[in-house]
Length: 154
Image (cartoon, rainbow, N blue to C red):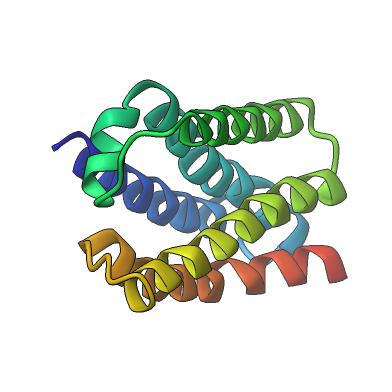
């Protein structure tokens, strides 16, 4: 149940952030990136970090895995990226800082999706998360990349 709550929260925060960035920034790409970055980074890195660090037993079970010290370490890294994203946003360090934190988060999620897909296909771990992670990551990239690229090009 706990992993489902986190998964739902991640989707919800990203979608709300997407609509807020368009509502607050209109057609200003740099502002759109600035308003969208925290929803992506805090939901993906922050919530994933909290889930992996403090609820690792439940998270591992939902993936058909056993708990590992590396899972907790990865959770702490995600927390660090999430906190960094919050600092970058609140300090208003500019579009390049917004983009850097968002790129780091999206790269991690993309590489993680590759691992989940490999685990599902090659290792036979057909958990729902493993089977869907690649699809959801492609949808996420289609949502994020236009805002990211336009924010950097402006």
